[in-house]
Image 1 (spheres, helix red, strand yellow):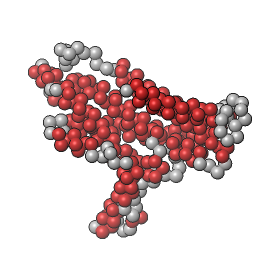
Image 2: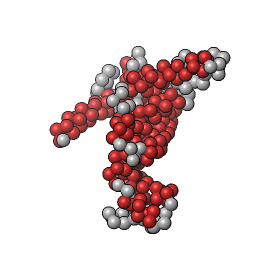
Image 3: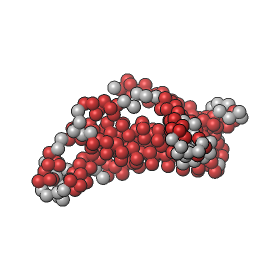
Image 4: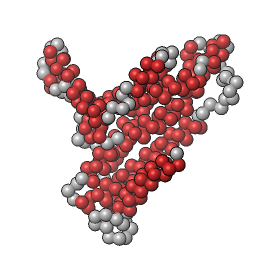
Amino acid sequence: MTPVVLVIGILFGGGLVLALLQSLGLLGFGAQGSLTWAAYGRVLRDPDFVRSLQVSCYLAVLGTGLSLGLGLGLALLLRSAGRWATFMCQVTLPIPHLVGVSGILLLLSPSGLLSRVAYTLQWTGSDQDFPLLVNDVGYLGVLIHMLWKEVPFAALILLAVLRGMGSDYEMQSRLLGSNRWQSFWYVTLPLLRPGLLSAGVLIFGFIFGSFEVPLLLGPTYPRALPVQVYQLFSHPNLARRQEAMALGILMAVISISLVGILVGTGWQRQPRQTSGQVRDL
């Protein structure tokens, strides 16, 4: 395990160090060899930075919340099912995101399958009457893709937790007079919190840093932070790469900070129970 972590740490940490040096003007095109924070100042003064940050936070928070909620419902529904339920939750995991994006475009674009079906059934007068579900300002296409990918992932984690904890606590709570809702809220949900926290951190971090999905399914403006980084990096003016690196470092700091807040809040709310205790109802 240690060699793997070491290799990943060197590759990931090395990339961050190189990006930091370029953002400070110590390395890369146009570097003067002296430390400067000018790139960070230009990025922070750019109104597009605030809009991009709002978009990324909107996608990450809403996508994570919906994925956990729907994943929890799916896990509870499949709790008593056989191994086929676990297999079904794993079906979408190995599918590359670019393949999923292609499917969303073929299905939900104005000239896609659903639009053609609606036109054939005379529900719409033309493909222009079909609701805009991809490349829209509300990022609906991006959210639909994220839910398609992350709901089964969350359900898979929660399903493992549900099957591992058994039903003893719930049976005891029912014997003490609780109804089904009280048993879920006061017993099952607190025991699921570690699984919800783990899945939530992974999903939040991925959605916040996702690049290809907002690029292909999102609008041209406002852009998500990773897309903004890419466009600055690929700008014809190579001097703007310093700003791209600065924005990338800021995005990493924001992402780590938000995940840290999420983890800290989740651990503070962990139920303090021994193996033989059930919370009073």
